[in-house]
Image (cartoon, rainbow, N blue to C red; front, side, top):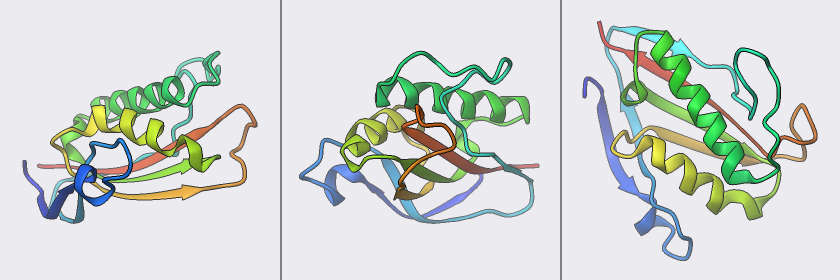
Length: 138
């Protein structure tokens, strides 16, 4: 990987009481390259802007992460170039499901992560929104 990941960890050790398995780190150092700032991704189709039908946090997170992957690929990168994610959920009880699902997409990547529980997102049916930043090496 082109980026330096400082103090890598896995949430299995940091949150042993939760059923999580996410590869994260405390800091990411990048140099040069192209920075991609992703808008907060929600559980909707990128082309039609239609919401997925599900009100399940796992299914919504899959769609959000698929959108992130697709946008990074369209920018000429991949998930390994992801350096930061910010996760917004509307209920703390969704945390394990959302992070477990997100972890499937960032295995071995180790981005930095911030998680927030918010009162609501832009549409009431949305349970999760994730924004990200990536740096694609030159």
